[in-house]
Length: 160
Image 1 (tube, rainbow, N blue to C red):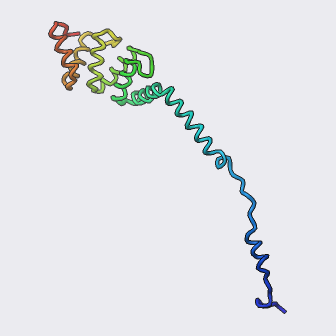
Image 2: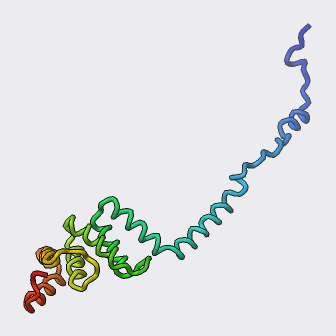
């Protein structure tokens, strides 16, 4: 004969113990145990690298933009080489980047290229080209170019 639900006696204490039995602790993954420590160490090293090599890193980022044809990045690369910002002073490299930017119509780069030629900074421009670049910069309202052009032509040095 089958027992009815009213005939079965359930010990509530045993049932409570079964429900409250703790599960074995789950093993934590390596990331869970050490993720924060790894992130802190990596962040610290990144900060040290940025502080120690920040200017050099900035130069490389600028050069990358210049290689991809961004005229502003080319101009900034020329400035960095001219001033030694993140690298040693390199007039030849500065004139190279100014020339690339000037060919794309960057007025300040055109002025710096012409001015660099006047001061013999390895521009490799032909005679008369420097004046043309300075004139382009003056037409684009670069104040220094207007002043330089006025001085050079006023003293008979046009057709550089």
